[in-house]
Image (tube, helix red, strand yellow):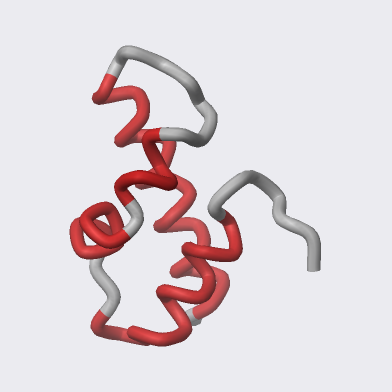
Length: 65
């Protein structure tokens, strides 16, 4: 499977490993370096957080129905 965006496989792997105990904040802590160096490249931290939060929530919805 190709990545839809940089970090997609990391999100999916994290969710599958943690299952229903997954946490967005834990994901951020574990993958902070990857997130900082991934699009969207912005100085707006709230925009960056929102983008990754939406990606995370969308992936949770797809993986844990």
